[in-house]
Image (cartoon, rainbow, N blue to C red; front, side, top):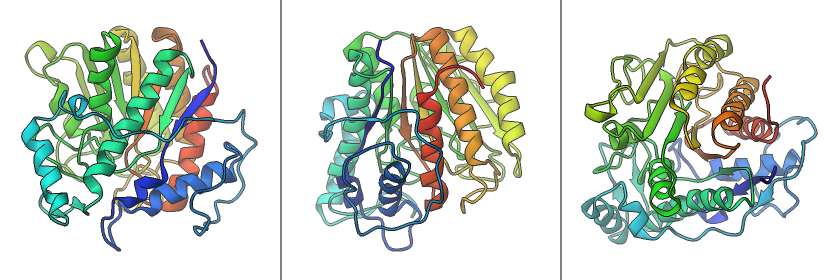
Length: 341
């Protein structure tokens, strides 16, 4: 098994245009591209040379990332593993007529957004293929639009298609993986992922997020634990506003890692949102960049124990550009360094 960490992204992710004041803006990808180069993680030229942001110093990288080739848009048959055809056609239609808003106001799309959303899914599936093939032990896909709020039959919360949920079904359908665990540490509850899998005992979904009484989307209470055959395979860990590194790491040690140990997944996926950072404008959690690396190392440790080290991570939220870039670099550092703290 390779020890390499692969990285999948595309300059075309900036083509999904959400408007000049929207938090889920193209500069998020520009910031990540600049940060991974400032940290010495990749040698390729920055596709956005006009973008400038002072990230401050980074520690020396453990190794370079394996940059995967430009991804291709996902075949819609894979998207249909989660979303009905009517949803796919609705997103396509709104984009084809010039763009608009897909929900109550916070999920705008431009004419290019349908193709970019398929490209985002394609990049995550490319990361899956790299790990399955042994080209890389672990992979990170820096994509937009994000995915974990997209429910099977509707877009919401900046999300068009459920990137990570589609990846889980893809791993099962194309690569024969059985039990899959998804850990979501975005500050907002992964309602779309939960909706896709809450009755499925083959998928363990764990979401750490700000208390739904105080934060979008208003779901993810601790009593939401799955339905029918999936009862017990949904674990929601609401965090009080003001929670920081100590509270999150305690939740990892007390709840997340024991749940992974009990479930024994064959593959581990991460919905990696960085909007729980203390500088993020959309919530009130106080995580440091170091916490993202520490949580990631613990998940790598769980992958080493259960999945032969195989782990795929995909970008979700994170809206302060400097904090996003620095946090992604720390997440990548955690993915590169196997073992515990």
